Image (cartoon, rainbow, N blue to C red; front, side, top):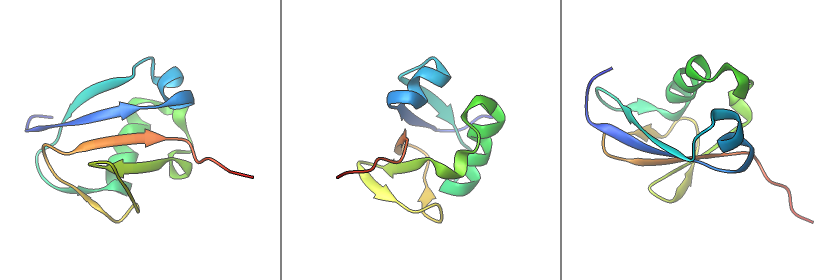
Length: 83
């Protein structure tokens, strides 16, 4: 991979499983959240199933169809439930 990186932030259990709170992840161009999650699963198989994870791009919650652009900030976290 070579390109403008995205800044990836990991929270809670995701951070524990990846062993990192954040990292820079080079991407060559726009890709969907779902495609990026597939790359995440390849790098960190311990996160499976990644489809359950939620994403925020530039501090906005997004769907898996949302495009991630080079230079974006992507937060990855577990779904949360409230009462």
